[in-house]
Length: 162
Image (tube, rainbow, N blue to C red):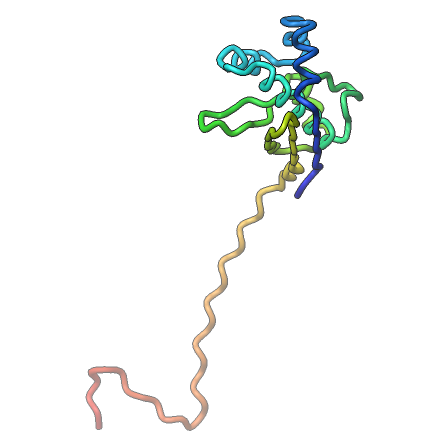
């Protein structure tokens, strides 16, 4: 079941201006360590920062908290798996809040076009842990039906006939 959906749209130029103005200080404020490691490998840092900023906004909107109620900007993030798919990650504080809210898996998609960045996040509700079901009792074998009175019984195979 879906817990929440969040969407964010922003102009990439806004992040580019902030990055030019504050540089490393902006990066350190915005990104989790795993995200920073991926930033070091990108050839388009402003685009990377814009996409990750939008992803963070979409995730906290899906959580229903925004950047309030104990969620900081570095408490949620996205990292690319080995196929390039963005995956939602949490800091220790973000993980505690995620569990408290009953949030399970998170999914995010990112795109950019004509200077706009769009992020959509879908957070699933955590599955409820159920007690192991009790094993079903084995059914009792049905008793063989008794022959009707006066019914002719067939002899057993191989028995001599009269």
